[in-house]
Length: 311
Image 1 (cartoon, rainbow, N blue to C red):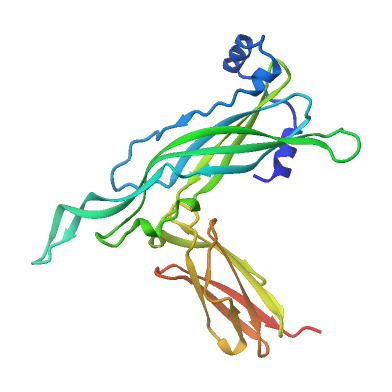
Image 2 (cartoon, one colour):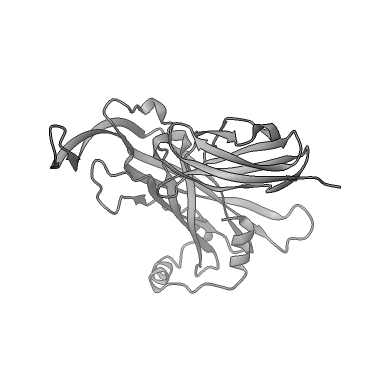
């Protein structure tokens, strides 16, 4: 969520204070502001649904509470998250799935056959620190009265992120630093002292193997250009759950290469699965189709560009 969106949401009105939270406030009503500001809860988040050894789940939930004092008027939301991956371990473990397979020695199907696969398995914990930006909107002069307030937490990890044939996967292909923090919810509750508690929650998105690429989405750019001009092209590579795939290689083909070229080709997705390239017209008018392909997969997507004569 963008900071401007959060500010707009906050200005719509005050939120009601839940009864459960009021009980906590009444219990701590005698504490000083300094004591309250030293409270930085870091609840450990556990997996809620047991998963099988071959079940992939790239999402690790997190949450943290951040206290903002009353003299700052506007809370702009999360503006940074730092993740400690030093306690996160990767291993390649065997897992077994039960499937029906064609009988290689004759007609019919062998039912309930056990197939052994390799699974890339992340275990351990992720510690994180996040900061919330707040400022005094009515502070005279510049700079404004502003600062960051921090929250801390730890999330348990027990996730399979990729499954493949035996002997085809390695932890060397997975960089835990490629974890993507995705904030999904921010709520603000006012305390008895007029301070506010910002409750932040979301998921860390773990990396996955390239073979899990399922689609190219948001493949768009300039649909019409003049002769000799350049069209900018963007897209995002995601898995079958719509989660981004970083470090994927995407190459491009043009159905009529006499009309122009794509550069760079190939290109690589960033940590959020996005890629960028350009098509440059080189020889007259016409219509071209640029096809993007995720290397190592059958995932493709087309983008049509019209080249016209401009005055």
